[in-house]
Length: 374
Length: 260
Image 1 (cartoon, each protein chain N blue to C red):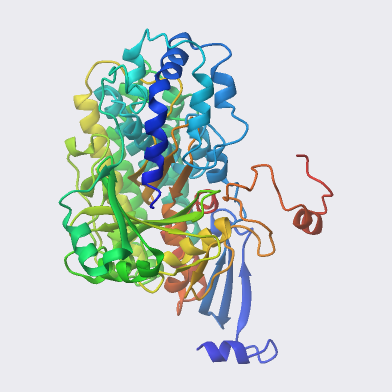
Image 2: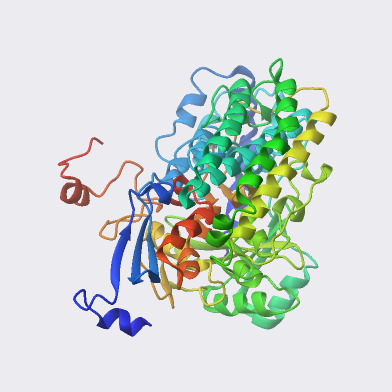
């Protein structure tokens, strides 16, 4: 295969090089994919990334531990709540700060809300990429409700700066629980609406079944995590494998797919929304009273040491490796970005597929370029 | 010597005079004191660095009024007054760790040390046998570390062995997370682990991009986040945060000089 690519020229028109992006609506940001095409068929695809690189890790080394937090909102801006959560879990472990139960529960609830909102945005854009316009509108309708909840509690909709060291900024505002309950009561019906539009839709099935297949074993070799790994039938979830922040107290299932194709990943994410809803339901039923912020110092200075804190974000394992030299600024914060790692599998997934499938596969990996590039 | 040992050592001699800054900066929220420190212009470059910083703050007499609030914050400091309410966090040597023993049997001098911090074990190996250790960890059914979580580097500017490679491995089967470290000097190349875990490909490219560390055996080692013709490696400690490649900016963006 490779020799034909090299030998052919533009004139014999056997192999066509095509630039997809960086400004392309279906690349979900600024991703450039250099495609090598034989007619409609993809021979090779090379990702060029870095257009959104802001040097978040470098900035972290020059800020105090607390001042780093807003920057992590802006890595994966679709699920900003989870990002902050993972980092703070690491800092709190190193500082041996205990987070009150109520704060733990609220954090889990908000993180799950953020998972739902992230999956909704994924479904909306994934569907519109493939050509299903209605789902887009439906998903944004529900996402709006979640963003209103975020706004009520955090004061912001997207870059929320959700949590603080030791707990939360403030307690739930009046009327929050009712609004949250109303949302989760209505939510299953709403998901059914998406399913009616897509799950048995012949065009949807034709566009997603058998597209971008990866086996579970290979997925692990590529370091894939989250829904992409689970779509390949591997029942792994950081919330179950290495529970953190109180997740062990909640009941939920880890949905898995069978074939590891785009369709299965779609089903897994839909089911994950139901499971997140279950967790939120349990939080609301069992929410204890008490303070929402533990005893935390004004200046965070962890002892000399290092800690890796990994959580299950909406896109996979989101890790923060924090190295402290005992000063008020981190010696190093390494973000393990789930989508940076899952994007590299694109090349492997698109080979042999049609040009149009590339868009479906980029969609199914659920990348956020802000996080890929950091 | 591995670098796990180093962070500890500065701590020890430091502790006698150290408790003061902790306690006082806490309870008064001293007007002048925290600011020079939180806005510290130059970032300490190596783990030894907290030393001078703590030393200079120690001047305001060691009044010790609120050991209670100080204790949860920084466990390592208040050694002399025995005021620490919580356990002092520090590196502990791994004892009776079968993985460490087995590795030592097999690679003898190649395994430098085994320590743990917050129950996360770290094994420091020499870079010469790094590749073999990784193969052993991945393929041996006893360990079965099939998932390379993360791969990154640290820059200890000023040390003879300047860089430290850090690998986080996880075994789904045994539910076990470990960290492997290997120190290298600036000229040394690290054996690429892309042939062991495919996922290492982009991560190694990122380390190459950000630190300028060379990986031998990587088939596509080029910059990934920064432009191909960029000069410098931003995550090195001697690369100032405001530093930019002016030549590149001039050439591509037609900006003569960016504001410092």
